[in-house]
Image 1 (cartoon, rainbow, N blue to C red):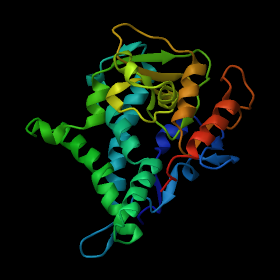
Image 2: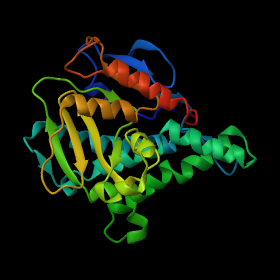
Image 3: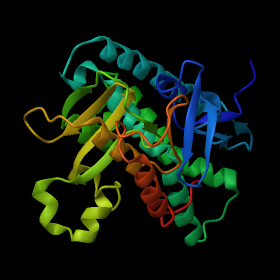
Length: 298
């Protein structure tokens, strides 16, 4: 079987959860102002986006793709189990792949890769585009995957099993948000970082507090919360509180849009405006403006 040419930075298994019965999504560009219908295979992907060049000069197109697929498969099973359950708050130890998928999504984000590439270019780093991509992937996505593998080995050292984002998320409360009617959208920003935790808030100006709603300018451990939409009816709300905190679907959608760096998507048989979903048009216009001042996607 030939190696895949399209490398997805958003798992198809997640996008399928949000597709209409005909398998299509309605996609709204954030890095560019476009709206179109698409099947899951064609969005959230970059041709050769996870290719790496090996020391002997050959191009590896499969190593990271297979490794990523393994984590995505484990997470897909946990998402299905969570959707079938009635849990309202979960112990992350019962769903161990989900924080690792969140970290992988952050680390293989085309926005993060674009930022790192721009920094390397600013420092006059020498190398071909593929060599630079390899260097970035090795310290981002490959690092997450290596730690994930080690986390399953009881004899691995704590250092080898540690990942900074997984550590942050695992120390938060995980509430499950369930909605009777399908009202959630999805974006390439899988775990939407939002706001500033109260104990850190005084150190930030009003302007920085506004930026923090878009997951900008605040380290993950100081964030107020993260939201993760898993299906149009199901989301996770991670926060530092000791009691359950409910969020309306509109609030989850706003955070999903504000976390987007490439696109927002919903079932192709939905239409805007739709009050049940929230003011998506305004939020996407705002996010396109925010996106315009961030380094371009790789």
